Amino acid sequence: MENRQTGFKLVKINTEQFATLENNFEANQSVQLSVSMEFVASEKYRIIGSTSHFQFLMKGNPFMIIGVKNDYLIDEDSWAGFINNEAKTITLPRELMVHLAALTVGTTRGVLHTKTENTPYNRYFLPTINVRDFIPDDITINIEQPV
Image (cartoon, rainbow, N blue to C red; front, side, top):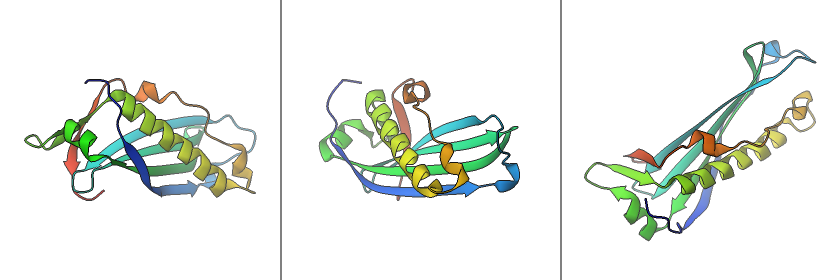
């Protein structure tokens, strides 16, 4: 894809999932982190949804789960250049998607802090993550209606 500036703005933040599972939590145990990202698109609203999911694990079992979705409104000119109406898909440049994913992870980090403030879970936070590892190429998404 050609390299060009894409206009967008953050229009919505949604905490889709947050849970602490006390039965799986043990103080002073090692912690692993499971990470996943997903993207959706809404042609009707010119929205790209970027979701980050994290599970904090002890002994392979989640003790804290969080999923946050950011919706980004893409400007009309950029959207028109990405859309394939015939195939009902949109192909988004890797660099744009890396940027949106990084913003979403940062948002998730803040939501996690707020949800765990003044609890024993507040000592577990999201480390810096190279989202480029999750987005090796341009992303093609089937277009859905509402996001």
